[in-house]
Image (cartoon, rainbow, N blue to C red; front, side, top):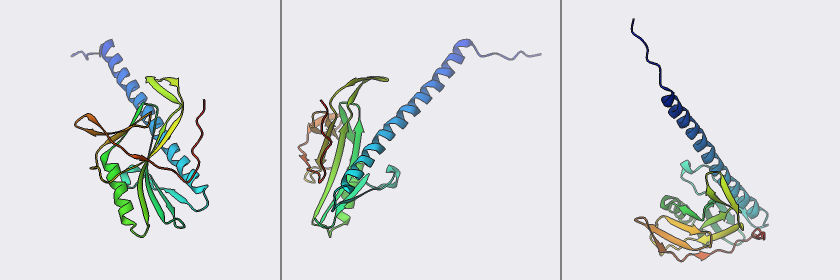
Length: 189
């Protein structure tokens, strides 16, 4: 009778580590998405609290829509907004998200002012390792995409500086800071 080989103890440990790693990665991804959804929801509520503005979350990224559409018919203004939130010192915006936002503002030609804005929120905790954070000041930036630049991935730093990313290298990208119709959350010190 042939004997059935039992897995060695080390093989069981490796399989268990892979399961734990997968669960950890899923939890981290869920937390990251939740942070983004909360930032989008906060922005929509801020716009909707201003009398002449209406804002809407447009759905998941798989639909090919901007995160937020904000409109003021009284002021003849439309914004498409891509919202980024995180605990790192830089936040990245992929070029395809810029393209889809630009496509939407070009669609609504009736509005006199049409802007594509990227709203960055740097959390009051900075990630310094897996599950490890240190306290810092919460910062928010609202950068207006300038169509004189070719559409490319770009990043915003915790200090509010923006850089185009090309072939893995940073190049300065001078984007104007937008003034929003609502009052930004004051910084805590």
